[in-house]
Length: 262
Image (cartoon, rainbow, N blue to C red):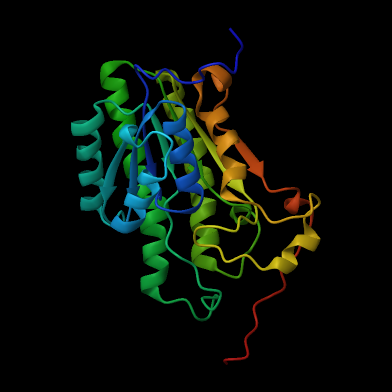
């Protein structure tokens, strides 16, 4: 059998994807059900979740969940829903993130915006990963987690709430990987570039900075996500960060924030 045949075990594997209503989360969730993996599509928008499931290759394998992950209660509700519908979740993808506004630079971003970005990105990522890991450890099953970070975990973005939360997630991946590896639970990061989807409104002028000559699409990330999530393909990989950016990180394209409103 080829190493790329049946990267997942449809009899055992089950997945949870946050931010599955649009963008990168949507592409990965649909790719998972396309591989026969029962998958929870979790998102804040009921309409987007319904549309995402309806357009999937195997909607019968998709389980909807609608709620706000900015609170501890929302995370606990999602974990409870996962246990009741799928049993033990073996694959976790954290892609949820609040929408971003270019106006929210260092001197303008509100406390509420700062706190919500941290809560959805970092706090929810930690709570969900730890909760799912505890369930896997209890039944002595391996697992694979994938957290969506950003090039801006290491490069300023003029959006301090976004960049710092992604930097925190990059370290969270390493902390989780170091602790959970002994239990057979792998944790890795997927690092997107300029992807014209989800919370990012891509400026077409960015194309001139991308060696491969075009903006990215969410579907560009799904194949890499599946390869990293698959224990068959990437079983000896943990604590790693996989950049999918068309070469954008080879350049430096951001100018400082405009402060005309001061």
